[in-house]
Image 1 (cartoon, each protein chain N blue to C red):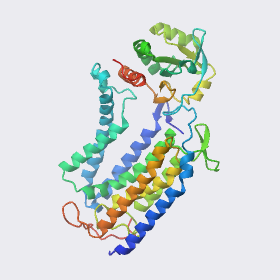
Image 2 (spheres, rainbow over the protein chains, first blue to last red):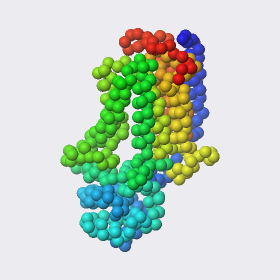
Image 3 (spheres, helix red, strand yellow):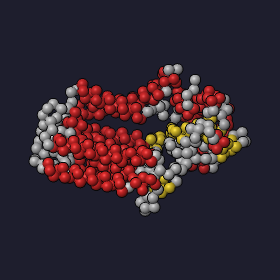
Image 4 (cartoon, chains in turn orange, blue):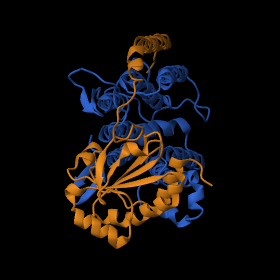
Length: 185
Length: 265
């Protein structure tokens, strides 16, 4: 099959001119896309704000950790991987809290019960700050579709990593903690 | 957005599932059509599966290398099956490297091999669009168009759907090989044309969609479009050169095993 090279050249040039014209004609949309992103439960977005009661009767707000990295873990006492990773979350909290790392666990209380959650934490000797998502509003805001779900939030309040499922490896928790905190000796 | 598929008691991440199914179908397609590109189907299949396995292992290795201080203390954690310990960029690089080494060792013709894996790339690209849609990634800028979708707090251009449409159109034109001369840009008897056309159409599709994609860095947005234009230019230039009788790696102009029939499936 013989193809006329001259025709091919004309077609190629026409296509490239069209492409160049498209690029020149569309900067308005590109400029529009550089606006700040809203808070959303995904990597690269600001972590959605929340305020919840804690298991010990206090209150925890995400905004109170402004300027510090946070590991946010959604869990329930009936969920085996959640139970398996809880001691490792406690370990990473104890190891890195002096560097400014915060670990907050959010119990999906709307799927669990406060007494079961408290009993489990007592059994495994975990003393992490535990928020109670009684009506499920924070889980909905974070679009939690499976337990456990863990959000790694940097000191600017931006979500750096989301891990759905578990249990998380202790090595991975340490690696991510170090990433969030920067270089640690 | 549907990041998880619930199958009974199991929650399966949908994006990797789409990619895996797309890859699997792609390998079958490439294997079946390899003969047309004068490649061995078994070798092409082995090449692609090797790339996948090397990519997965490489993603873990890249993660380990990036966090060496932790894994030197806990080396057994390298083999952990727990989630979250992958570096996707590193995995892609190592996968490509493994494919190149395999191709070199098997003395596979560069352009014929690229042509032969193009059917896999076509199907994988469609699967990639579904994976983006499932994860809510590569999302669009805000819009008031009636076809906008609610995502991340706003009505947005459904750019992953645009991706899927572009990938399907490209597949319709190129699968398993171009059905027409495609404005005279393709020749069945010139090795590499099929792959170059795929790259060209992919770059063209991205360039058309990019203005609707939400890119937070104006610098990145400003650089991507000219880069895509450059890729198109290089592809067309290369296609022109090859159609003019450019020689293949081994110094010969390749001929297809059967005369190309434009109406052939």
